[in-house]
Length: 124
Image (cartoon, rainbow, N blue to C red; front, side, top):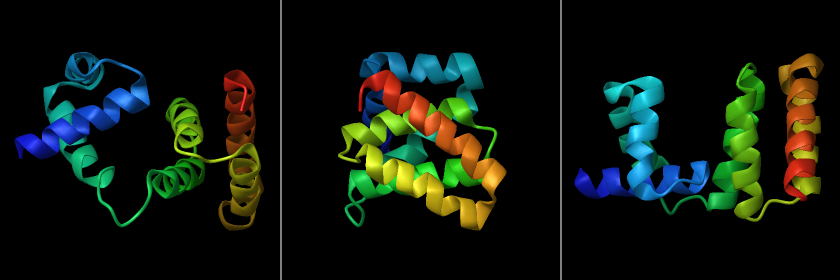
């Protein structure tokens, strides 16, 4: 379990642009000890499995966040991370456009706006 927790810390450190030692306190401060432990354990498995590349995982997570709606701040973080994992502006914009057909235009448009804003912000 410790190894999985450590992998979760590394995944969150990369995503949140924190030092590994800052991850747990950051999560605990915002969400509490129980949530922090669950998030770190889950991330230790979800983001380190070899079946999907980090790029593919990023695209799946962005699609899920756009479909869910109302999680713009998390979406911003994952757009930056997707670019770090090799996704291009064209891919991310195409993903948001494709989702319009499946999750509805209002939700996809809101997601597309966040994606484009973040891509502009990071210069991607």
